[in-house]
Length: 500
Image (tube, rainbow, N blue to C red; front, side, top):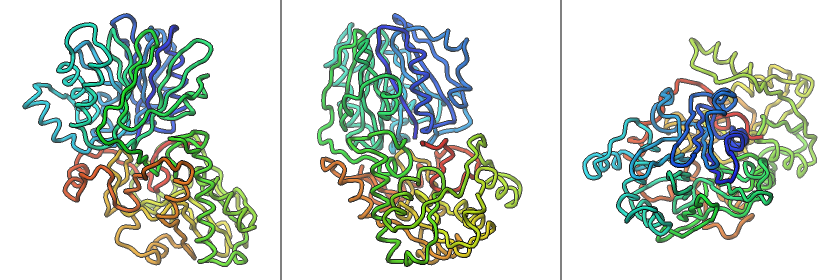
């Protein structure tokens, strides 16, 4: 999961790209990068770290040009520690192309072999984004019939790409001397939208609408599944549907946790989606724990807050903030001994003891993956004096790995895999455990846009929308998971800054 942005303007874009990446920082904090285009030359700055750390004044001065793109990276394939795998990626032929990618190619291994044996192209990293770039370069070379490259030839290349690529991909690319290309996989798994600044005509494409609106642009529309948009250097927008059978099946975890609550993705308000999840969760709670046995409802910061507030409102139970999150504590790396790991969780969250003492407390989280952080938080509530601790998840049990760009662990690491709700409750240590229902979740969010064909909810229901995923494929992809040794253990954390 990453955040991507691209801009075509008639003024320098370095500051604009920087501002947009700050607004997308919640989508990745491992690395950041910006490329700008001046005439036919690319200028690039990328490194590991967050946006504020990667770009200094001297770096910004070295990024001239009126066209550019950027990315914040959270790695789900390749080597997380390699600075070489920070994006954007660059290839010099044909034309000179740079690219940023959000998603995960499920057939990257096979494509890499094809690139070497058939396309005679070399990749130098384990990143699937470099594979994608080289497939784009190869297809552009095949479709182009000279210089200048025209939009029809670009769209022909994207059509060919859709036939070769499997998995999820939202892509922004710059073609030297020509313009900016953006496209989305035929299922629309990862988000991508576009907008315009009415004052100067600047066109921006980005992962989330908040990046547009927060940088002075007016949201115009989403890029459709399978669609390609080409913006030439004069700012003229060309578009074409390049997939044979596109259907809109966005990743439902974007609405559960990943996206910022002030974003609108594929016509759905993320905030309203989370309110709706709280409404459906209320029905599950009532059937498990009588409301008169709950004294207070407390969210686990921070994405669960809309669901928790709606739950409290519908049940007529007081809503309170019981945890304070330290925004300045970084990753929780593997440490020698469980005691040290517990300490690191407590460094990130501190309890307001008065909200727990002597009360029956219902904690609300957006989701639960490994369960280890949930167990520690439940114990923190008990240590603060809670009589009983109930735990409600706004999402269903996460029982299956995600293969489309969210770094969810192998099935054996998932607390819900092959366990009953009662067994999970015992592991976490709460007095009652309430999960959202899968179909109720889909209805709650899907009702906000009836045009959706469905969702990728594979981590909850085991149905992979691309139709090419089986146990062997999952095992193969797990072999290329980033080598990050960390224990930011719970589902909803994902080692990212909170999207709020």
